[in-house]
Image (cartoon, rainbow, N blue to C red; front, side, top):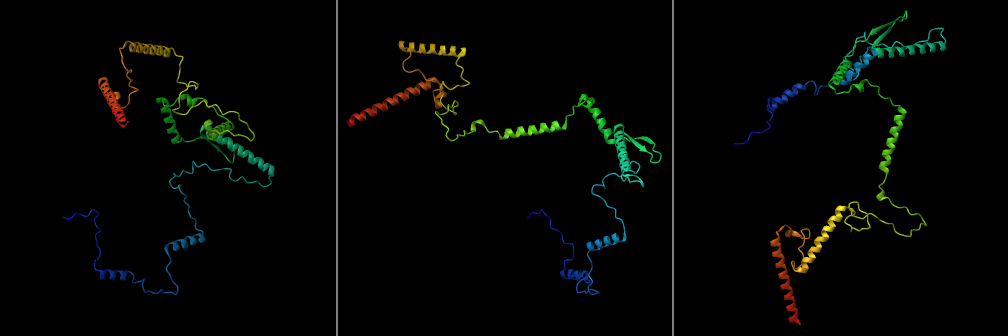
Length: 316
């Protein structure tokens, strides 16, 4: 049994007869194919061109277009009541007013508006000035929902102990911007100097013309895996410790005992090598098997030497 196709084929629901399809196509294109224009150079304009023509006609007629800027359509439209209008946008010079008086009046109005703005920001109110009488009234500003939510969150954080209250209420130090700029410049300069600073080990000596050198330099540092010498100072070697003197004395006593035992005949032959001196698998073997292997090795070496001697005698 054949497997079913995973991606099903699109079913053909139209007319399968090609002759009928051709008839329908000809009916659709009846007014297009082999149909000359009624006028001489008549041609149907495109949709874009007709739209452009409509816009140009509307502009000529004086029709105003409402321009929508990008991102403005999502912003909430504020009411006209709370909209702050710039009162001093166009301060015109009065007829018969001197230039000095006009500039003085402009300066006074700007300074007053700045003071009003500072007062409004400090106390959260709106200053309303009557243009005719000059009376000043104060109106309380409506609370900003976002600011209120932020204040509540801050209070909650202080209450829960997430933020220290002293950081919020305490007087913070205000640095002079010029001092901050100098410190930043100094820090950047220090970083650049550290990057450009070469390692002392890889610096080369610059020998000037005519300079005389009578001896090579004294190198105190040794490369890795070099021979240890007493002349070279090493931080790990502390020979003046009391513990080292005791250990050295203990080793000397052991050496004297071994010498005395050799003389009396207790231990014949060489002393057994330490585990550090042994190599390969013999290090892990027990002492008895190691002695057996060594004795067998010595016996085989003796036999090999005797064989060599006998061969040399025969040749002579």
